Length: 480
Image (cartoon, rainbow, N blue to C red; front, side):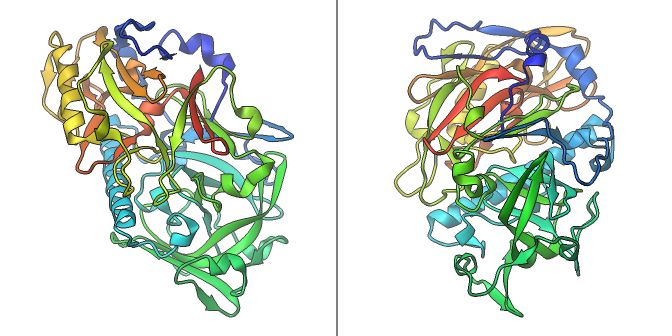
């Protein structure tokens, strides 16, 4: 998802430092230390969500449409009034980490089952479960699209690990609460159910048939599920109308879905929204997850035109056992401009499809294999001995008491990728407030498996582009 918010660049560069260099030397072009504005960061935790203006039903929220390009505004859940039940940062933080832990557990279980040749996901032929991050309550970033004809506006979660577009549908025998009216296919002139004999239906394991319509059912170990029919439907993004998109129309749904009507899958499979756009958009999209505390929206763009000039490109790593996920080649980690002593093999995807490094929009906190995390954390601690420590909080074991500080200097944190690019994060992407009184924690956590996940906290504010057709992911050059 992928934005070029040039109007904000000058402002953001005063508080965000993002440097990507191709040098593999320790003589890096970025500073080894950077300032974290403690008071400003704490103030940003007190943000008040604003009501997104309601649009006429024949318009959906967008920024720009040109031939071969689609652009949407991207909102964090805390910015949407109807999705936010509390303005207390500690409560929101605890809820976010709870969602995140469930998301990570689900991903680890899912990928371990895939490697073992098993699947607890009945819709495996889609390349992904239907509700993905949402079934674990981890939907963090939302867009607004129109479903049907005439279009009915709906908030949907974006999920880079899912390969389906899915919304709740009437008649709804069991549905969770959402902010918009539940979509009713009867009111759409373009809704067409998928027949049992369709090639689409034949691609789903354990597909059912009821009154000639292809039915799907996806269930999970935590009790979450979605059940319904498959259909072809028209989606509207801004002024662009996209016909014959395969969607799941859920009539019975249960889980921690929190407000949204459904999900827009951005995974690497052919049935994701990106995959279904195909040649129209060149298999490319770009996103920028807006930084916490800013008043702006992020953005999500589709099309070859969104691939930026000046990005640093890293090869995608294909995992045939998990084709929905975007794996990247990570070689190592750095603190304060120095490479941490971690074997590259720790981050390598093996021939069985286990391990590796996934970029995931639905996971908040980056997870690293325990041995890598311990070395990384210890390197950070060794360069922050001047900062007062605090007790661990939730999944974080390295925290600091910064009450009373205006700003502090902290060592840089960097990802070293294959082919040379080094991504250095802004301080607010790795030292985050967990309350509103000055407790900050190192925003990484150990993983009980060999899988590493680069989460959305570490991705915030950085333009990220996925060129699926050519097999690359790009970082920068823009910020949001």
